[in-house]
Amino acid sequence: MDKDVLKKEIGTKIRQMRTVKGWSREQMADKLEMSASNYGNIERGEADIGVIRLTEIAEIFDISLYDLLGLTDKTVFNFTNNKTKTINTVGINPTSNNVSDINLKHELEKSALLLKERENEVEILKVQISQLQEINTLLKKE
Image 1: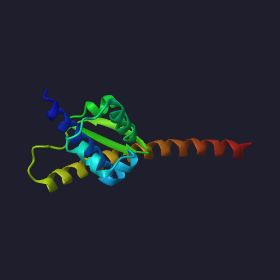
Image 2: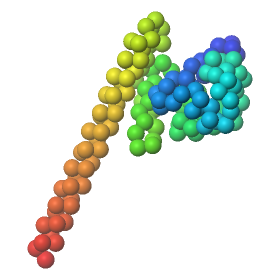
Image 3: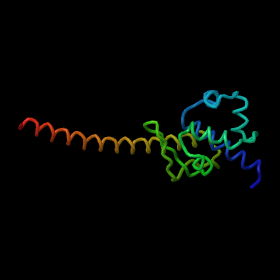
Image 4: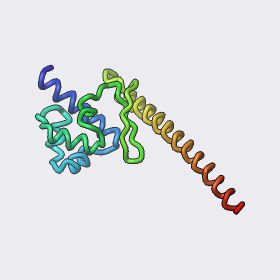
């Protein structure tokens, strides 16, 4: 693979992750302790990124370096409870010419994943409530 193409692909993946998190370029640059201009060079694929910097970026996103480099256009991220879950599924179509369509599709996918995660949390809470009710009943008998 051409080095320039690889830099652009990695920059695009980093920009997508930052966007999913809802962070501005300036916020991301602050997290990396670098200027917004230099960070912009990373996202545009104009900078050579070392392994250390890529590792720092992955840590900021709470994902492995492997996940950061292995992202595809079919990767969707679910950020809940300060944990990042990578889910390989149908994701953003990067060939779409309409940016608002891409953003809308992404927001819908993100919402669906968040809803599913919340439903799982509700089920866990229901089990905990049931267990507490049983304990309460046992304590009343004694």
